Length: 133
Image (cartoon, rainbow, N blue to C red; front, top):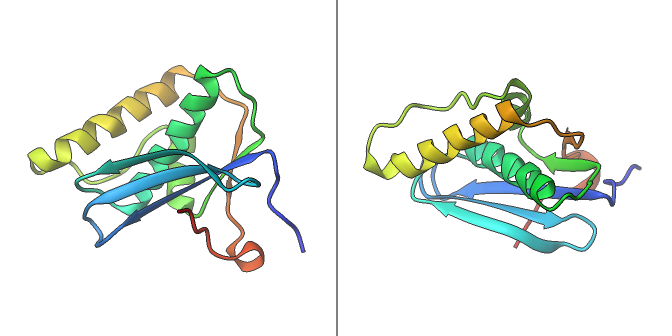
């Protein structure tokens, strides 16, 4: 049985209903200590995971830290980060404006920056559910 790499950050997003109020978090994987958390009035889980991954990459870059892996349970978010494009729904109202601005800023950061951190799928079958407090 494999284990997640200890040199890693695990990100997770949740919302009450899809779409609805959304929150994303990132933790130091082995220590299970919270590194960051952010909430939005609206959003969906894949968009939250996308933003969480980019937030972690920006944090690593800004602090000149080298972490081998960022884990997420969203294949969609991994693809969006790889393509540097969050293929989420367009803004419909004022409530979604903040989320839309965050997505565009994340896409812009991805387009203008390189990173060596791998972004991998959390192995739920071997490691269980991601549960971040």
